Length: 185
Image (cartoon, rainbow, N blue to C red; front, side, top):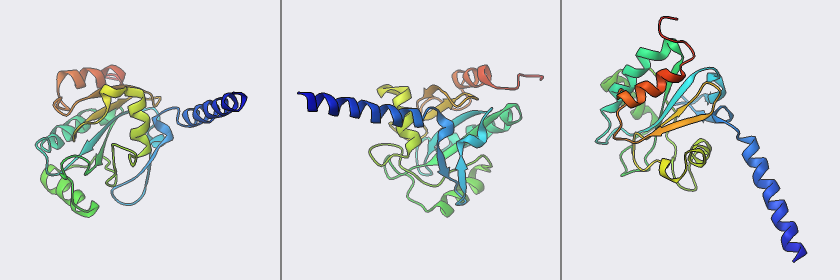
């Protein structure tokens, strides 16, 4: 019984140390679509909208709305980050070069994009494992174009389903409410 208790205490300590090490979104690093480190800590003080994307999905046209949102609010402290993933329906089968070309040619995307990663399951990128713990079961990405809103301090704020477009009133209000630079400021 004592050994089980000791094992339980050690397990709790290990889990709490992992949670403390990943206290907010700024703790995570992706590889950019250009092959360079993309540390979310670079965006301290900015609002992040992180979206798992796919080039061959019924929601792919949301790239236009993501670019529009980025263009409208980037000078006020919003950063949109696209995270290509092939986890849903094999709808992002291309290489990072093909994905980048597709986004630039078809949607004139200039917001940051990461390399292709997993966003669900045991192989999910560490950011996605963390944000799902923050969002809870209902906030798990269930398809492409699932969106996570992160405040300027790196804290999880909210999640939005693929059916909620980036320029919807719901997302616009949520983003505007936490932007570091207010309208006219």
